[in-house]
Length: 202
Image 1 (spheres, rainbow, N blue to C red):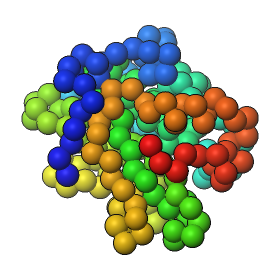
Image 2: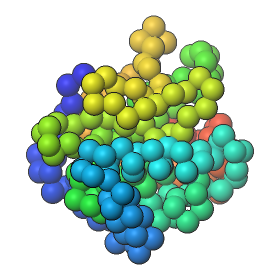
Image 3: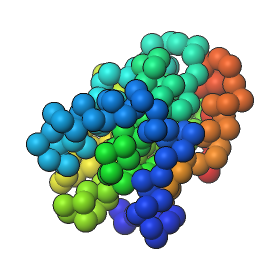
Image 4: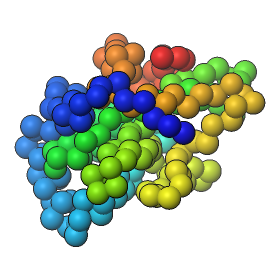
């Protein structure tokens, strides 16, 4: 799928913010530690992705009521839903000079359309050596979900089912979509938010 960046400047995909807050010492430290372990930029991107995928729990999977939002908050509590986890991966990558952004999918909340739809967040990462973007989904694996780092073929958490009117949005955003941040800030119980409060469209 061809991607469309909402900004023509890679600098916008390196920006520090209150959401992708890589100025925070804990995010800086983790980014530096992962970069030191990696022999090159591609290996670092993979390590960062796998860290957020595997070491940060998805709040719904662990049935937590906690809501996290900013990268530093997600890192401190080691949990978050996809909106929050994408903030952390973005911040880790940007802390080491790797452009990263946000992508979205419209998925069914359950297995079929009658359960309703939700917006799912994942990341796009710019590979400097290859001069191209790839998408990575650090939502977190479990039975039935097997997202992997791949340069050849996308291995995302959720393949789109067009027959169910699911959508792959082609835009790579330099900042998280406002609706995803708004929902995190408006609720105080993650389980209630996940079932009844997530946006259904961008």
